[in-house]
Length: 544
Image (cartoon, rainbow, N blue to C red; front, side, top):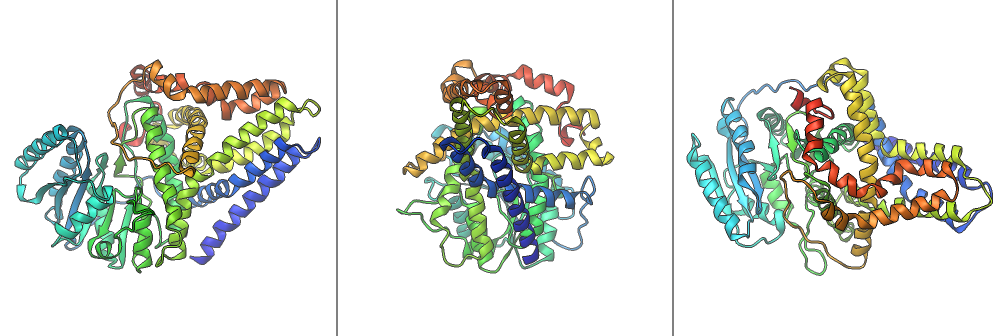
């Protein structure tokens, strides 16, 4: 594994070097100013994460080229370990939560391994009306099951330790007699085939502590999740394949759609408190690092079929989820020196922080570029070298997704799963524009959240809306007026340097100006219907 890690480091360093050279060639002519210095510093600050994206994209692409379009079917030989399917809920609509669980149980019942599984719904619901509805739904669900004794429901009265506390309380008091736990979130869905894939891996390797399945988005009717998951699925496919290759037995755990060996997890994954005595919000990476530190393997199964989650239905929900994750990941700074972790475990925590921690560099680069364009009346805008540097930066940053698209285009069997070359290309184009606009909007929101955390503010972990909805113009304006004002200011500055500067900024900053209509239109049912009717940005599960 050491050589594989060195290969990743070499690619990261090469990308950093290329970025540094390209930026120097862009900025040095005409002399240095404060704005140019900020641009260079911002680029170099973001370069390691950009290089890391390029490394995972290149490695994942090379490995995926040899893989078939779909994984081989699972063949069960011999009994499987007794497994508790643990579904965590908190103030959820059970009409959305329970149907996927029914499909999973019914599917497992049709296999020879069905008797190895039992269901536990672990509730932290604190709203009285929601709790009453939840209990009634569970009573009906249990009564209609062919084996009601295998279904258990437990609700805690206090949300101590958040989701991690919910799960640990179950393991300590209700999991006797079970070897494994399949952990699912309220919006998770897994096929019997995917679950059996994980269970056979656990049975065949007793040293495995966690097997995490690659999880992709469910088919969506609304435009926002439809476009988001089309690109996310592509990028995560190459990303996960690369991680599983070079991180090997010390890979990631995302907190759901994973199979866990109960005894070692219960013994080694009781989370410490953060200073000053606060529970950890984002638990998964810490638990994986602790379990690996105790000598148990953590594997990532980079197969995209059979493991799903729902994505936020509109931009406001997406932004709230991103900011929750940002707050949770930044808590890891308190845990980097925690005893008992291996080097890769500490890297997992750093990697999680870098996912959000480099965001301020992007906004500082954009602001400095606008400043330079507005104040440098002597030097013409260096369009060609700026374009070259930008293509290196964007190409490396989006490498996992772009190379995943190339993987699909190179194989007829893979293109066919997405409706053929034409539909795939249209989906790629729509998703690329969508992502560029979305990233511009998110950069400012994440930067503000990062500053708030640096100033000592602590984020909450509020319930999520998972239902499709429209977004009014007034709601969008109230949420996104800072992006709109900043975007207008930025383009006013670039206009001072002429049309070449404006054209250079359009792909990466126009999302700021268009934030409000972007938010409204991507939540508009008519736009979602238009995409569905034309089968654009459709995933294989939708196309059948």
